[in-house]
Amino acid sequence: MAETRRTFTREFEIAAVKLVTEKGRSFSEAARSLGIATELLRRWKIAFHSEGQEAFPGHGNLPPAEDELRRLKAEVARLKVERDI
Image 1 (spheres, rainbow, N blue to C red):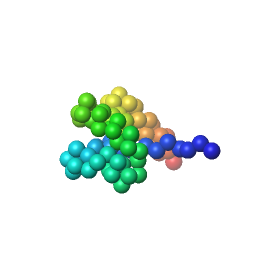
Image 2 (image 1 turned 60 degrees about the vertical axis):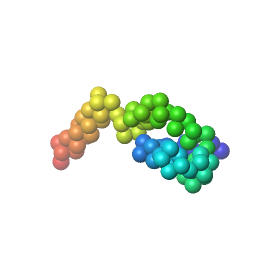
Image 3 (image 1 turned 90 degrees about the vertical axis):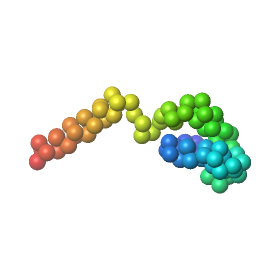
């Protein structure tokens, strides 16, 4: 049976990295307390230090064009409902 892939918010990933960098916790200790793999936390730290504030662009940080498209699609759906009423 396939396991579903977990996703994490940008804020969670940054907070996890800060547990290691600012709070002085070890990778294994921080990963265990968060319920994630140690190697995943190591990759997050590398990404955060190499890309800075641009790290973890996934969920919630859409490029402006995609954000505008999503907003317009939602508006079209709302207008169709109003029209049908």
